[in-house]
Length: 95
Image (tube, rainbow, N blue to C red; front, side, top):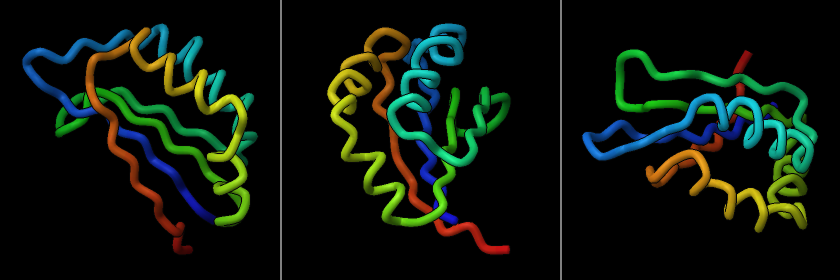
């Protein structure tokens, strides 16, 4: 299984609309990516204000998701909920 995690760093000037992210942006991503599982997190202590993990059955499934024709809309939507530059981590889930 492959996990794609997108994290948004905390900072003094960072703004983040958690409600918009949860109710609009993440559902848009789920619709475009069709992941096997999604985990949404609100940062409490640590370097991130929020993160989301999308799980895929394989690297090919993740690559197909990242090639979605809706990717432009997804990237354009980021400004609607944050001014933070996201970072991405791709991991292999080890049992």
